[in-house]
Image (tube, rainbow over all chains, first blue to last red; front, side):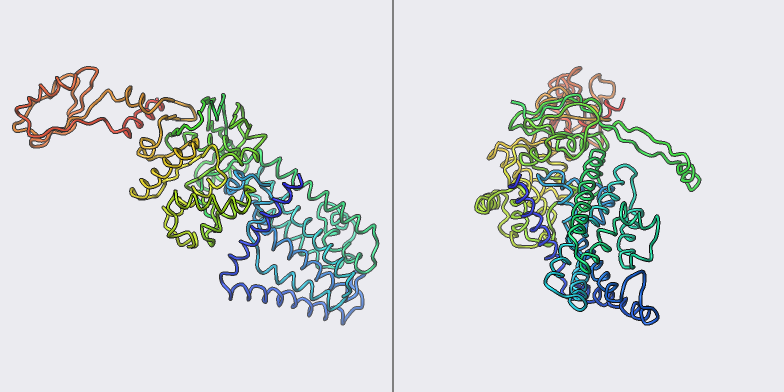
Length: 264
Length: 326
């Protein structure tokens, strides 16, 4: 079991490394994608600066906390898009029969499939997140908590993407649903928690777990409590387990295809 | 000893039926109708160790679906599959260590990497230690003659070179069974011949069992000793290549160049395929007329040249497909 896990990690590492090598073939595109993503994220600081010049508090968050929320969201999103990019394309992969190549290999199909390409602009998100932390709330402890929350949040985002994409096994083309849910997961993660009330808030702590990807991590960094870490850990495990269960249940219904395709 | 046993295997696909036009799309949206396509119907067969079998049939016959079930890609609706002692639906990962797959229509190599890097990656996938994979790459490099493009990115290789690399990638872990799904699709005749020679050499060297699907009759004729023909999801013939030719080759083709015209219009057992100037092409039904009788009718003294050949295998197979359609 341990050996199997070690071998899986080795192959996944190599797969990500090769995917990165592929993206680095074009130096200009590689560098510009990263820089423009940092700039794109930075633009939103202006929007919040204007808002906070009019008000001291938005949804219970100070300016610092909102920027930290942005940093957290972009870091979490960056990890998920960089390391697990294909989880966001999984619906298309299932519908076009591209799982065949992974199914004949003796490794975990889901992991192999979602780690076979990387998104370069996500490196910009990762860098932006770290910069925001360093500028507004830096300490070694906060950095470690930031990294831990980022990884847990990314696992949760990827799990949601896999669960929604796995619907394709039952309902065919579900790309639009998948894109919408994935969009909601990132868009709402950049607004202060306090502006959402009632049912929406329940939603964010259950089936659309922004609590795990954004709100609780901000609480962890602002006012550390072990109970928050426990919530994040248990929540992440539940979502990851659900993603594997959904995917493998659906895989039994996989119908492949004879479309020509290449690994490019 | 059988390495593959398939018993009463069936697989259906549910396909949405849509009438033509926008109206049809609306109808289908409101009240969708489905057709059940029986892709594979109750097929059974066995493959012995070291055998090279051809699994052939027209498009949509169910051959790829059958192969995909044997490799664990698709789950069957009913029936049993045993490949090297594993049930692909339950032990897909364990089975994957023992089999290799090449899908002519689907590339599995990273195109920006060199064949060497790709082979190393496949070595990691199959948990082969570094030194062992190096040794295997070296061995296969020689066998498949890859020297000249071993360090060229795959995207810059010709189709024939790529297919060779695909086959090598599928052999890195020394599979006991190799599934080749149309490995020569899109290749020119010279490259096809080369691939065939290499597959033959591999089968001889490693005793690998090969299950091949192809629409190219030459692939089948030159590589396989046994042929399974499927049509409409059912096996319509499972026999040795020798038997196939013996039983179905009850016709011969005579090409003759004559000095004078010969009239064979109403002769039983002889079908005139071509009669132009002094060139004659006949199909002789050996059940009704022997070759020597046919030659006597032509009169050897009246002949300038003669060539007697078998009916092309392609034609035989087409006729079996047609019989299956009836």
